[in-house]
Length: 43
Image (cartoon, rainbow, N blue to C red; front, side):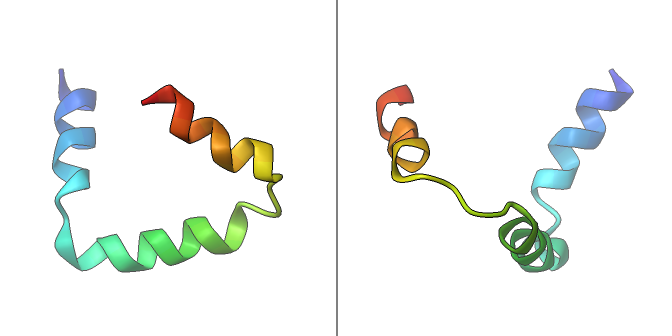
């Protein structure tokens, strides 16, 4: 339960959203177009 609470609360930490997004974008590495488009079909 504590793990779920941590994950839920972490999503709404407004001060950390932009730095976390920038970090994720900088460290993910190159992706193919097929990988990017796979998100369209999973919704």
